[in-house]
Image 1 (tube, rainbow, N blue to C red):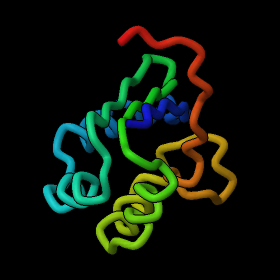
Image 2 (cartoon, one colour; image 1 turned 30 degrees about the horizontal axis):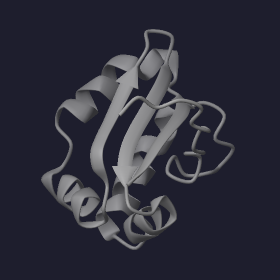
Image 3 (tube, rainbow, N blue to C red; image 1 turned 60 degrees about the vertical axis):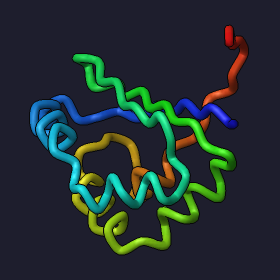
Length: 106
């Protein structure tokens, strides 16, 4: 199982709305993530907008590609794009660059 951690930056003025959107993620989006192989997916948000994401999957590239092929993800990404800083026209999913794991205690 591959463990993936990534960072993004949520715009300060949209933190409350970002939290509200994630308190009620669309059921079809949740189903699509699970079907695409995203497991133990968590997002952590710091007060300055730093967003830390974590997920487990067999193959991150394949799991991301599976989501890219869904209509629900295209809608979700379009709605979420305006929440993030420094994406320069890149969809939030495409900006999820995995961090290098340097330690793990199983």
